[in-house]
Structure formats: C-alpha cells, structure tokens
Image (cartoon, rainbow, N blue to C red; front, side, top):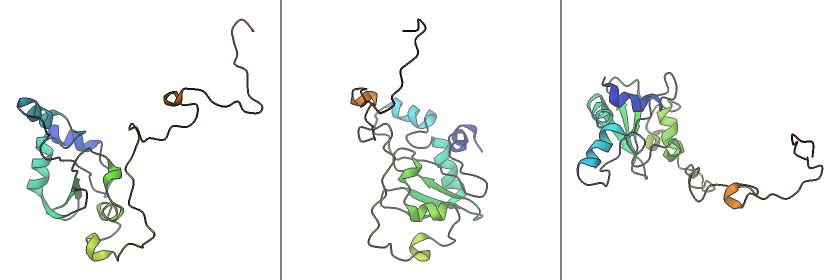
Length: 161
C-alpha cells in the first residue's frame, strides 16, 4: 500500500469488517499543474491518485448510483469501496448502497432489494456549511438575537453589576 492514498482512506474507515469508503473524483476542473498537484495531495474533493489507482488495481467495479458514485468490491470479496463523484461525504451514498457497503445485504442493491416504497423521499445530503444549513433563531448568521425566555438568566459580571 502507498502511504499517500491510504492516509485519505483512514478517516473514511467505518469499522472492522464494514468496508472502506474511499473517494475518487474525475477531473478536478482545474487546468495545468495545480489540478495535478491537487489530485496528489488533497483527499476531501476526491481521492488522491494513489488511492484511485489502488482501488482500481485491487478491486472490481460492481455498480454505480444516480449521483455518479462508483462501487467496488475487492477481488477477494471481503472489502467494499465507494469512489465518490464529487466531495467526500458519506451522506452522498444512497441507503441501498450504504447497506451493501456495510455488509447488511450480500447481493447488489438491484438484485437483493425490492422496489423502494412510494412514500420515501430522495435522501438529503449533509447541508452543514452551506447556505441551506439550519440556523436557529439566535444564530450569528441570523443576527445573533434571540427572544427572551421566561426565567431568563442574568449573566455574571466580575464587578457584581
């Protein structure tokens, strides 16, 4: 194993026997040497070059999802991987593929699971850090003011006032 690629994978390991969530994005969208350097040293917007190389060398592609994520199983069959299409965020994995990655089902989702119930909504990605994130009243992004509550406290001050 190469150290650079697996350093990215270490943070995505979900537990013993549960498989690794690795990431690989296609072209970075940047031109010139900066895009190449980004693929070597950064893992948060796709896997490093060595991680993608390792997964493709030691795994076999088993499927993909509507978001463009590609799923692999190791050639020995004991590990399962995802190469993300875009930011490395586990909330971007659909529930049926999550079940497969974590060995909750043996077969591929298309074969092992029936059709999804009509009442299910599409999964929502993690919105933390985006403009769509939840911000309760009193949050700094909403002005930092909150309504007074009954039994509200008075802050302590060193001069007793």
